[in-house]
Image (cartoon, rainbow, N blue to C red; front, side, top):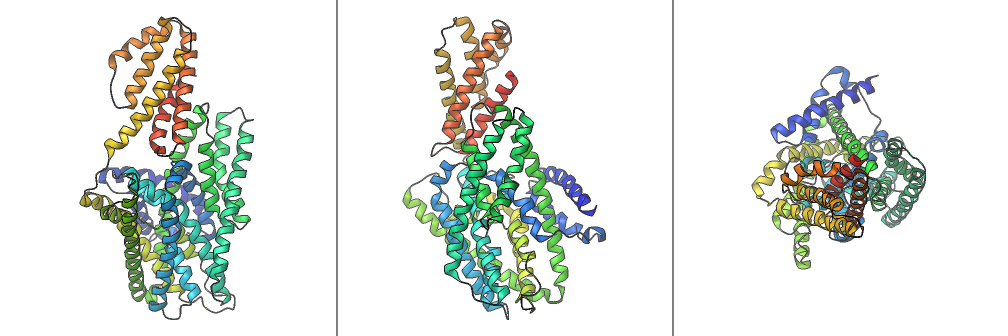
Length: 522
């Protein structure tokens, strides 16, 4: 009963905190962590405990799936340097530096335990940065780079953590050659699982003639993919990301009703799950501080030192990356300057993976001896979350303003307009192929012009007012033509979304307007 009350309570609190965050211009996930910390002082809530092994399977799959659907294979093809450089190489460098720092600062810690600590602290959370960035206007190129990094770095960190933990529990050394082989094999199996499960789900949904039923199956997809991959000792993270990307790649123009239904459902679920997850993080932070109160001050100092090391390493890596990106001359890449590097460093917020892995560390090894440095590890994880999630999250809007980073809104609106214009031309070309009287075709052209004007931010009130009278004549034929034109427009937008250089979110904005028009016609 307590678990049910906690879920309902944090869910209700999320709705209130989102509104409060908008009023205060503060990121609501960070506020939810603060509320979780405060709630931990209530005796009945303080008794609540969620099994650490359930945290990742419950919260990570749907949040990753929702985040990955906002991108595309084409964008990943462009961002391959980011994925290799930040989601894998930077994780490895961070693990090495944190492990070295821990060996110096934490008495009695073994190399394997230090590597496990580095692995749990290395990956920024894509959900946290996505939710926090929603409170301010930052360039899409920066946000999409942070999202691309966050979607894959958990995979590398989890493999390193599992390998290091096995060695720490057994009292042996970390086999780094085995670690590399494990990661590659895990990624290969996970990719296969993602493709195969999506193919099966699409085969099934094609035979279900019910929009809500198909959408319900899609909601279970991320959990199923994650659990299957983990059961095969593969990366559930990579499997979920691959599944989400493949679902969007295989999307077709006739799925308007499904897209409208699923988009609305995912928006609600993503907000609730994010709020509940970050509220629980706050609860666990309070519990860690209470459990390790005996040596809290020295452990906090160690945690602050490690937090400083993580920030410095990340900034240094991104500063070097800005030099590389400038040499390649890609205007859509990030980081391209020290200001970009500073903002992306501040956006490297830790979250679910860090707290879940920290809480999964047992009190003793397989030999019955105390786990080396466990108290310091738990406190360090709590401090890093406070610094990189709560502190960074609450100050993120101020950092954006202080850096005076151009939000590039005009350029992004231009991309939306270009995709809308492309779809508009495709729809008009479809109408030209119809051998019909001008009095039938012209009102459809006017309706498309109105929709196009709305998409590019213009107004066409006169065309809108004339439309009601025109559409009453030749209703059946006009409806057929509108459906055909809108289908062509949606097909063109989906084609544009799959192309290199297209911002998936810009395409999705245009696609949603066409989807809504198509659903209304039904």
